Length: 245
Image 1 (cartoon, rainbow, N blue to C red):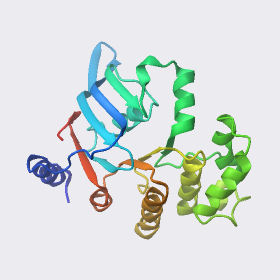
Image 2 (tube, rainbow, N blue to C red):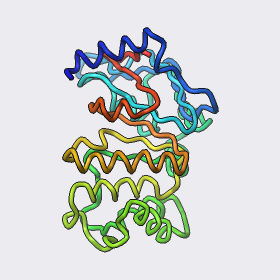
Image 3 (cartoon, helix red, strand yellow):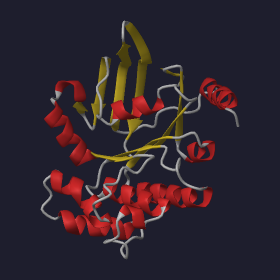
Image 4 (tube, helix red, strand yellow):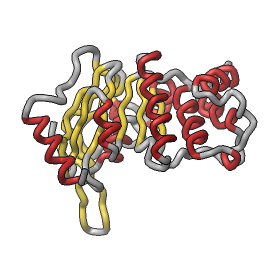
């Protein structure tokens, strides 16, 4: 399916009334969110007037063509960046009212993030990679948390292996274990299968949804894979920086 066909199909769903927000307590909200960056004397608008609400326990896919602002929106929702205008509320806290230390503490206690490129530290073992954010968050039981998280993703026998000794799928499982080590309320995933072959990607997808079902963790992901997007309870379509739902 081409990106144009993707947008046409999802826009049809929007007009038909599908893709509506679930009821229940909101864990992520955006109100009038825009993001602009300065390039020389030119101001480039990446996102414009985005409003959304994601309820606790939902699975949501953010989709759209390349350059539509998907990854930027995900970063803003996770508190990794701040919007130029508008407000984002994460687990009941308005991010714009917090300084960087307070936002970092909120992310450490509430948020997990899985990157397409894994972003593991090459000089650290699988166990050390998973332990690190838990240690930085001040958990006294960081090692036991990391061991449990790695066991949940099937890597209890790979604790002492370094990233270069692991396959791509194993590295992504380490990244997922790291994201879940602090038992987050919300997991954000940016193209979590983008660097994986089809079969490995399917296993990672199964793992993400299993963790959502078992732990009730809200799952918000960016993907170009319409098969993956269709498995989420809701799809949000971005087009030229605007949310069409």
